[in-house]
Picture 1 (cartoon, chains in turn blue, cyan):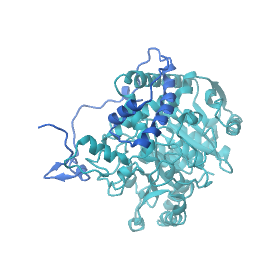
Picture 2 (cartoon, one colour):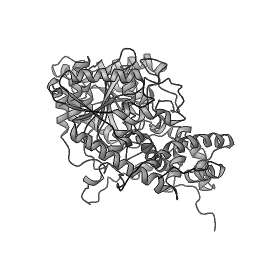
Picture 3 (cartoon, chains in turn orange, red):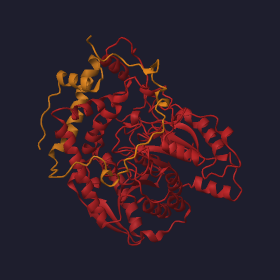
Picture 4 (cartoon, helix red, strand yellow):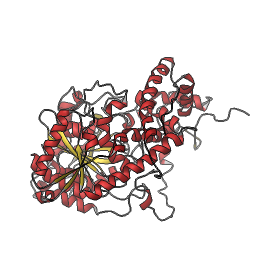
Length: 100
Length: 474
């Protein structure tokens, strides 16, 4: 596959910000355009690699390491909520639904 | 150059001669003296002397250890060197911390690092950079910068780091100490705050191959809480036996060493470092080893493959930092739109983390997922296959521990392509999941080191070989 030119413009940066839930101010947006250009240009080198019919390798040890399908629990779930904002036994989170 | 501090302390204790408080007292003294300048620790536990018992016969009783601050410690702040977790106090211990405590070790503090383990120079920490004890103007290497300098400056004899793309081995190289990235799946990642979960492992750092093997023997092994750990493997005792065994040069006779020309002939590799590397190899050859050269074109693109995978996994793993379940909250959660609340809380990330998350999210998005991420995973398979072919014909791959001298602290890492020659030999082990051990060969002047990469599960061989090589390089 050959390298494809991707336009690094305000629209792309807005999309990236939305995808990653990060907000940047005006100055940061200009700075990140250059960073993204450098990084994207570098990683796009992989598009020139001939991968042939190789299968994806997601984890180096996936194929030889499977356990018995037996459920278990340490019953420590509640302890791990210590750092959340709790109200009446519920974790408080911001509004998701905007409508009625 | 090589100091068997812990193994010797244990032998002394077995013979009834060791002061159980000695190592911890020395640590506190060194920390008080040096940490204000070196900035190794983010959090220090000041009460360890109260926890020492003269009757304690655990193997690591009385031994202080520094733990990288992306490994959770119950009731002891764990920050990942980020403002996002500045006040995070975990409710549990990582499995490796539990194992260390069961062995009697004393966690003396949490070490500085690149934020969320993302960095090469140790300069992206929200708490300021750690300094290199060998030369204050040099970077200590990242991301396990604090853990490396804790050992090199004798603040602690042992430390734990994590290695996603060389983050144990590069600091080991630039500080003249020993570091191991274990076979993927040999050390539990339960309690390791994720950056890129298919690439990273917790690993030991020490000032000798013996101490390194000993620390590995304590932390390694299957953990039901981490499904990526192996069910079957060598027993832990195998490695503690190696730690105490006398070194044997016979392992070098007939040893077939693979050398990858693509790493050495890279235009950005330092001539001086490559020349020193060949001198180091000649010393091994003189003991009966054979050097075989290989050239593999795809190896030149290892860092690019790594970064696509790492950025993608990082964007997913760091999506949880929104201020809901944990982490700093700058935005109120009440009566606020969730996207606004999340984005506001996530402004606390440092610049390097932000740009990696943004690019990772983009790589995984519609229209680019298959093009970048899919291709990178298939290229990863090809790198793995080529490496396994090389190790089928040889016993070990040896590369320089670093192809360039320690970079200055203020080196600009905005353009990651400038680090290509440094990254490629290190990231090979992360992409393939193979074990890799870095050890010093000279520390006067610019520190020299070599990296040993073996087959899966060959840590016993790597430790034994490293102990033999210590004799040659001492």
